[in-house]
Image (cartoon, rainbow, N blue to C red):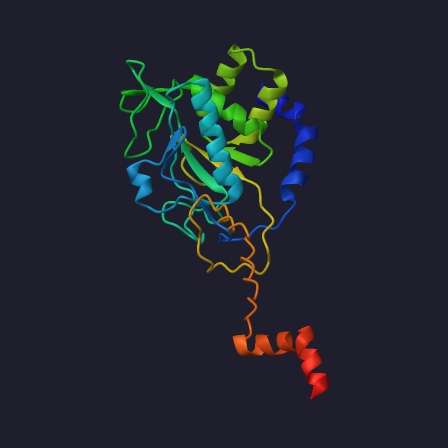
Length: 276
């Protein structure tokens, strides 16, 4: 069944692959980093991951996390997406990860519920789930409805390059979408986007989401500091012209200077001057 779904999507995959390759990657480092706040509308970075300081990513990645979290909270009120590691402020190698070096990778923990139906609290570590959607300790259940809703947003976003997840979690999601009347096209795109990571333990405790490369200026050095998200520029103050200079005030001449020309113009004075 998976082979058929992937075959339906092959033509579209070729076009998408070309689009994702446009731009310049920054191998092993992160330039123009954006920081994901510790909490926002529909998402939360639990304390375990907050202390690691790996909440930096490209603008595309940070914007994508905000988008999917807000969407799921809108469709399922009260939902909170728990976000794990992204990258360090300047990228590079990190413990526990072979990737997460360029700000293009993020770990999104699965939506889960307790067996009384309430949302799972923020975890202190990732929770693994089996093929039936049960946590290994039996206290939580994989929330297929909300995780499928999140996956649909990822599938429809052209920035997403891959979603790494365990094969049995992938099957749970495709079965759920098919039972809910998802179109064959959507199922094919979802199957093509998800993949089981190689040479690492299966991702049965989170979605590992990767976005494509972004075009970055060549002159940006990896040592540049990472601005705090959001990096909107501070608006410059409105220009106000200086007040006009006061008009110069005429200084009146002294009374003596004023009286001389006036006396000469008097008719009687002109007469006296002729007689002299």
